[in-house]
Image 1: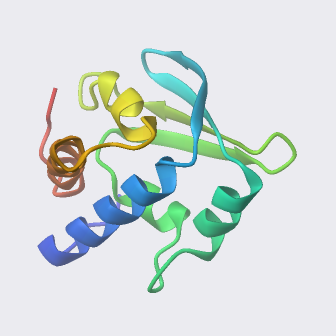
Image 2 (image 1 turned 30 degrees about the vertical axis):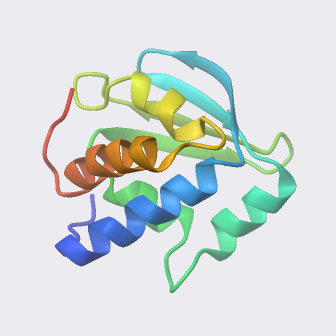
Length: 120
């Protein structure tokens, strides 16, 4: 896992929130999720912003055990520790048109995970 400076935690959280607004949950069970990306979001994930791409972001999140992209299926499968990451976070992340309060709540949880603090 990559250790981030607190300012970087916010940057990564914002990136993940912006990116996941374009995604859907394809399959989910506690500890494993498959997230479907439209081609435009897949491109954004790989190109990233300010030197940060999705792979770098995922390496920074406490509780993510492994992940695998399928370009063919445009899915990201994540295996995570459900005692560290609450399964409801994924639904909150992929909810389209989040209001500002919802975004702030999701961001707070992500920043805590990126700071290596367990939230359940």
